[in-house]
Length: 315
Image (cartoon, rainbow, N blue to C red):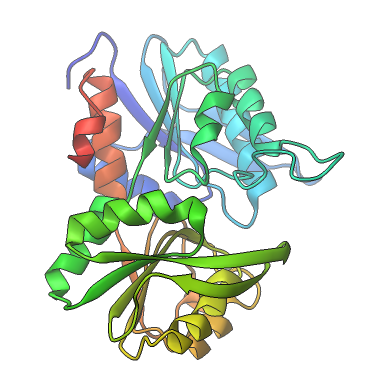
């Protein structure tokens, strides 16, 4: 590969399988790093090879152990900074605290901005993520942020299934723009669910905007957490005349709390997510399809290193 210094890819403990797949795609060996915990729970990190003058990448996604994942990431960045790495690119497929991107009520924090500040303060030079919950998070950083999208992965998958009479449904108006892009790509119509969220993890769908009668529905979102939004939309879609299969596509499958039980009972034809988050055996269920994201992330890393265009990945 081109560049003044060598490219080295390290990964934390949050998703080691994805880290190895990225290294396999780039045809390089994973960076050597030791990560352990003291008896009191504090995190210890040591880089086990020379990174002076090298271009280093750290892959660490945010799981349901988000606070530990982020603290581990900050410490790895600090270790690399003190080891005189030429540049440090942080790859966070799922960006934790992204939903706290504004003050929705008085005396609330803007936690996404806080995480951005901490990443910069620790020493990150660039951030790469996949399908941020909101575009405004990019503006929280004073360093470059590459926001990748899983839309091509889902579009290719759906096109291969040769589905007929499709309509892409956005779970709310905030997701309508992305849903429209997916609909255009696969030649489908667009519909939008109108919902009211009373509190976290609780939402009511009041009506459906668009024609879903007799259509194959593709319900899309950036994440599935407790699956409340997804399952709440099913009854509204059926009531509006959807009597065919309902597919769900979402980048990040958190599957917290009652999510697996809700998704299983909802009787979706398929639930398609990426492996940006690790999905344990306990979180897998019938109809779940997991698409690999290593090529997307690996190609973004390679193009950054070789100073090539990232946006052309999505053409």
